[in-house]
Image (tube, rainbow, N blue to C red; front, side, top):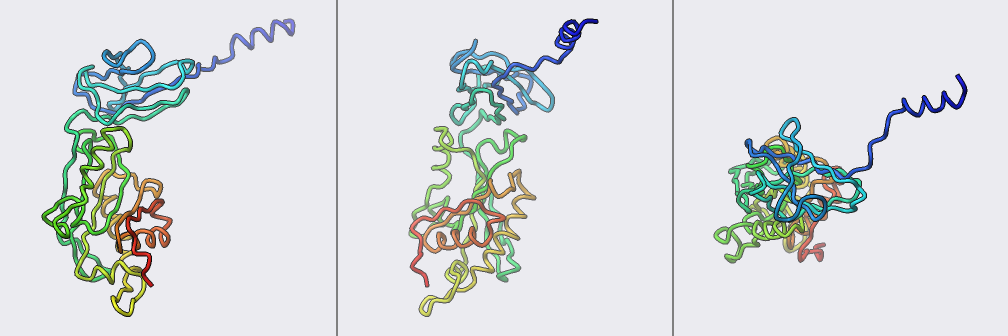
Length: 275
């Protein structure tokens, strides 16, 4: 056989590479109604969807040629119940995992009473906000935001001076606007020993000095409990800590002391004057 014939045969038998594509993999138990996709490009519109292909474990797939460029899309259950939380942005040629929810746009609060701290020898409540999709979409796992002074976060009845922070309402608005992803929020109550627990060293007037023990409590007792009990994304890239005043000081300190656990810290009106 001539060399040119061999080359032509090799080309004919060679596997053909898949054309580059933009893909949405939608994880949702549609209860027999199916999943459709609405988008700004392709055969669908924002008012009429195209069915996604069903797969295993309640996973649905839709693919666009990447020649269409970036795609903005929303899944819908049965092409009627459009997912909450804004549109999903897909870069051309990417594959994006989508975990929609179509029910209530707000979550719920769970209280863990008398959660013990072996490091500090006391107990406190954990006030845990589960996002809107938590009970509806069992396939999804969530980033976690740990916050101090939990009495102030969700309820004016328990907040200092009767003014809550409105953390759950704020998160719900941002999720609905597509500005942020859903998160689990773990509020850790303060105790009568708040100043000591939130301060790294003793101030001559105010005291302090138990923040190292509190750091270990949060990182090695609270977090493992949350990761075992809830559907979380436990890696440090999906774990943040946040607080206000002394809680802000504690948040930055904890994040610096335990970068193996926390990748982000939020500090509001921080008491960085503490010495």
